[in-house]
Length: 276
Image 1 (cartoon, rainbow, N blue to C red):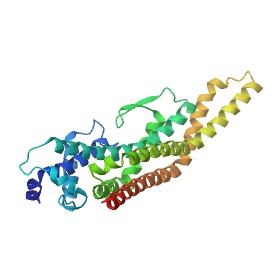
Image 2: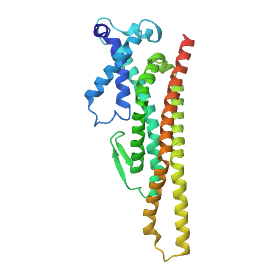
Image 3: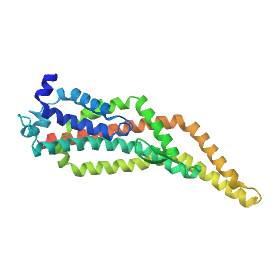
């Protein structure tokens, strides 16, 4: 196998470019706290796993054959192919980031009502300031992502399906469809975030209305000092009751997102096959 990879090094680098770009754009691996050496090792392992299943002489990657120099020289066309393969990996990783962004966005929706508006922490995965509750939900989602086997499903099924259906030329031909698919994913992001945050936002709204009525009925009561502890305790109590349902929703959201991504790849692949 090693001799085959060395003998087809230009083709193997194309596969490795997509794998490496995917790993560098995933939420867990994109963090700077993860060393680059494991990222490179995992990328080349994934490329070694996928390379024997691909044929650069016929099928989807046949157009690449004319750009692969047998003497190992890197032409401008080959470099552009490398960049295109890396772009495919970035698209997949960006879509996974959109799925994770729904959970941190949900935390941002109700962090202000809880009284945690000023409590932001540095998110090492996205490398931005994130509200405390958004970081908490993001951490729970990451644990669900690793515990339910969706991490393996992404690499085995999602990456494998992309190699079976997508190449650089298909990305160029279906750029409008890809942009429309990503915009639909952003719409789903806010939809899922609102569903996650709605029970807490509605409950905290009723609590604020109740405290406002009590403040008008009994002005001598200092509800401003007692309001923040009540909001925090109520929020954590509701979160403790909703956590099993949230975990199921997280798992269903990941499964639906990966299924939509895989279906999109298959649809684009069928259009390419029909065009050929």
